[in-house]
Image (tube, rainbow, N blue to C red; front, top):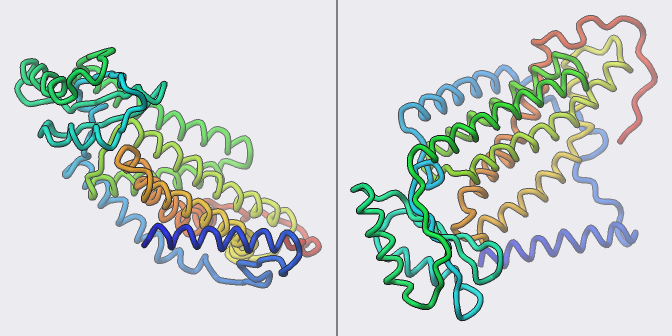
Length: 335
C-alpha cells in the first residue's frame, strides 16, 4: 500500500510540473515571495540542543560503539558465477541466511550471473572460517562456479577503516580550504562547524540504530558532506550578496532575508531528494539499506536543519558583517 502511495505522489508532482511548464496552470510557488519568517531567533534554542545532541552522539560512539560490517570486521569473500544464467539474489540471500553464519552480504557485479558473497568472521579462527565456506558450498551445490575464495583478516579490515576515516577528514579539510578562498574564513569555519555537526549526529544515529557500518556508510557520510555543503553554500552566497548591498541592515535581519529568499529552492530540492531516497529505502533491499537509512537521516533531517539553524546563525558569533560601512544599495531583486 505504501508503495502505491509513493508512486501516486510522484506521478502527481510530475503532472503538476508538466502543466506548469506548459502554462496550463500558474507557476508553482512553494513559498510566497513576501515570506519573512524569523529563523535566526531560534538560535538560542538550536545551539544548545545541537550541542547536547552532539555530546550524546559522541558518548554513544565511545560507549555503545558502531555495528561494524564485514568490511571492517573481517570475514570471507566468495566470488561465484551462476551456471544457468542470471543469478537470483533474493533466493541466494534466503538460502544462505538460513545457515546461521551471521551477517552475510551479497552483491551483484560484472555480469548478471556474477555474485560476490561476504560472510562475517566466524568465532573459532581459521577452522571456523573454512567450515563456513564448506556450508556455503554444500548449500549452493554444483549450480555455481567458484571464481575466488579469500579470507579478509582483521589487519586488512582495520586498514580499510583507517583509510576511510582519513578520507573523511581530508574531505572536511578540503572543504574548509575551498570555502576560505571562495568566501572568507568566517564562512569557511561556519560551514566546517555545520559539516562536523552533521557527521557527528549521523554517527550517533548509526550507533543508536546499530545499522551496519561498512564502506557504503563511508560513502553515505561523504555524500551527506557534499549535499549539506551545497545547501549551505547557496545560502552563504545570498548572504554575501546582501552584505554588499545592505550596509546598515542588522545582521539577524539580513540572515533572515537570505534564508527566506532561498527557502523555496531548498524545499523543492529536499522534497525531490526525499522521494528518491524513500524509494531506495523501500525498494532497494537489504544490500543498500544501511546506505539509504544513513542518507535519509543525514540529508533529509540533519542536513536541512543544519543549513538553516546552525550554519547561518553561527556567522553572527563569528563577526560577519560587523565591519560594514556606507549606505544601503537598491533593494535586491526577487529570485
